[in-house]
Amino acid sequence: MAKAYKPLPHASELWELFDYKPLTGELVRKSDPNQAGTRNRDGYIRVMAVGSIFMAHRLVWCWVWGVDPVSRIDHKDNNPSNNRHWNLRKATHAQNMRNRKATRGYSRHGNGWRMCITVDGIRHREFFYTEEEAGAAYAEAAKRLHGEFACVD
Image (cartoon, rainbow, N blue to C red; front, side, top):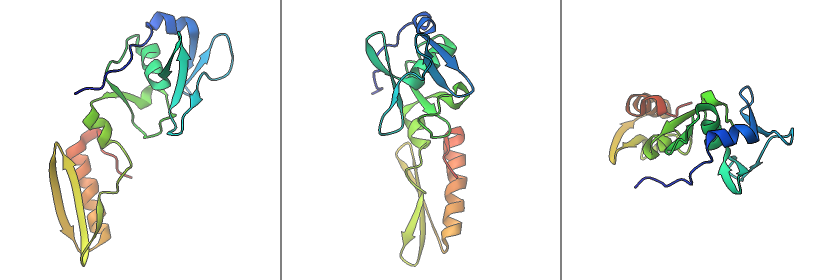
């Protein structure tokens, strides 16, 4: 089931309250020259607007495109504080989870290395003699299976 997001203020309200700096990705209150919001422990910026707290990347999306994204917004570079509009994209939950640095995709297994990647509940596993082979196989599989949402270094 899709996550329900609190509806954002209308874009016209945001345009009245904030300026947006596209080079830095910052929302700035028109009444205060400092960046609006505070960074939470996960690195996301939260902003108070019209009596509620919203995630800055969602407000930026609405400010730039003029519509509430309704769905999830993914940070392409995995930096939750980078709210430059070109770094944001709509994503499903699965796509958003694919674009994360939580795993390197391979681990030690017996006398070798096991690469494992899961897509739509299906596990793809391969065994290799070296860590380098397993890493390269994971990177190739992630690019093939996750497309533009692949997170490989």
